[in-house]
Image (cartoon, rainbow, N blue to C red; front, side, top):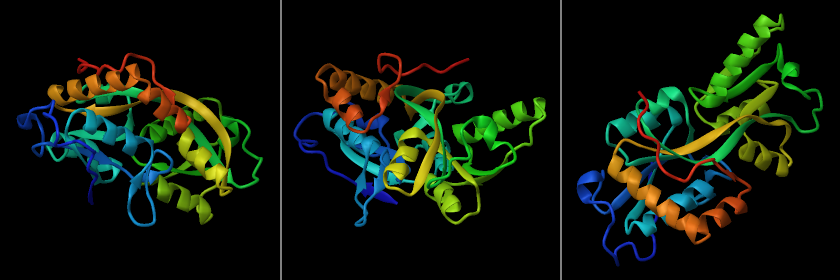
Length: 262
């Protein structure tokens, strides 16, 4: 699903990234998954909202490009980027060694993993309390990787492993918890906090395995253009104000993109 949002003044200045480096001339095409309130989500009329959405719109505006969002699942984001379906993945992909070998990653947000349980549940007070429980999380993501590593640790210590039910996005991750199919849901801190603030679930554990989330690219020209725009936002206070509004901590670094790792 493609959603286009026109930034004010996008056609009133000279684009700062040449058309030859873009999927669509004059447009910054971004893949996102609008299933993670408050980071990225769609309201009742289908309008995209959230920190990542606002960030992409502001970046495009500063680059004199029209922002266009493609709503897709996480599993398709990297293949789509490699296949030139979009210019940038704007979904907070966690920075990992494996991804750095194939993607240009620009860390900008620091995110950690949360464990959500049904509202009022006080049984889960530490990661060891997850032993033997059934959990839901997103397939192929950082959370799945860390839960599998935790299972390996449980095995070494003689604890019963968790059963992991994997889903395409966090909306279905939480739907599984809502439906009683699992005993806990694994997501990221801002998402878990949003659900708790709405009174739907309890954020039983948070701040686990903190790691940078990124904007991701294939094209160095696009990556550099976005980096320059972010540094300008940082310099004039826009970036800090936007992050603070959503309670998201900035990742370590200077908003430069990371070169491919060997």
